[in-house]
Amino acid sequence: MLGALAGVAAGAVLGILFAPDKGSHTRRKIAKTGEDFTDGLKEKFNDFMESVTEKFDEVKENVTEFADKAEAKKADLKKDMKAATDESFVR
Image 1: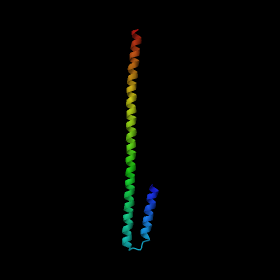
Image 2 (image 1 turned 180 degrees about the vertical axis):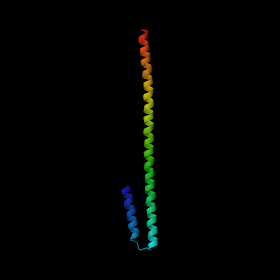
Image 3 (image 1 turned 90 degrees about the horizontal axis):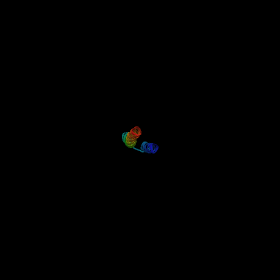
Image 4 (image 1 turned 90 degrees about the vertical axis):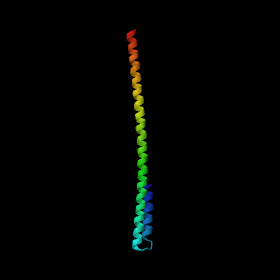
């Protein structure tokens, strides 16, 4: 995707450079195209970072949930072992 954006930007710049306009007008067009390209890249990067953050939060939530379940299971097993041990001493 990044390559396609770079290709579009390069094509636009080359098209502007070969257009029969005044130098100042051409420079303005090139600057505008560069700004548009930069804005596009920033937007894509922000979207990427947002998706990475969402995935990280999802994984973090899953790990926390798993740890909580494991801790509850550990407590249940501990309680069951204590009950079994207490029963064997009573007999």
